[in-house]
Image (cartoon, rainbow, N blue to C red; front, top):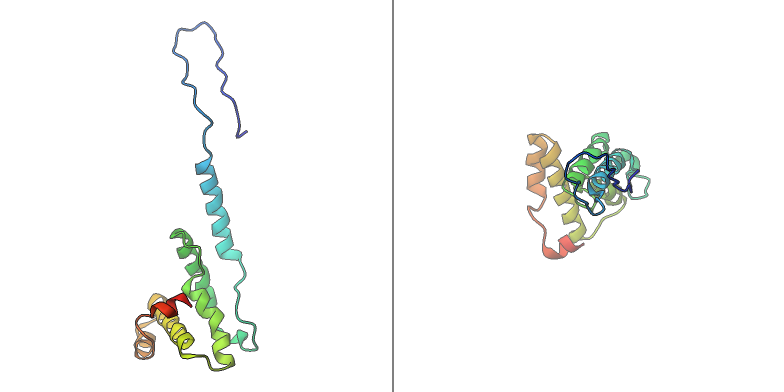
Length: 142
């Protein structure tokens, strides 16, 4: 039904013919299909975390908030993982063994961004003491 041809029949009435149009684009339909697919993907996709014996220690509220973060990233048309997903991935790895300073800065910065978005002021005060307010270019690249 998408590729139909326009045929105008002549019944003898005096009216101007319809303008012939080039093939209509299905961009609106494609966009709506993409939206539905992305929406369902945000809600049902698996959450990938670092494979470790610590992976069960990720707080349930963090896992629940990942779906909301995915939706927000989808609306902004970002193709990368959300900050909440990145935090959840790194959490079991941090518990496994000490990490280099650069990665520790990234982890605490992610934690600060997560607390700003989803938590209360008590946790925010604690995180602002620990986490860097911004990352270096090298750390952003990592």
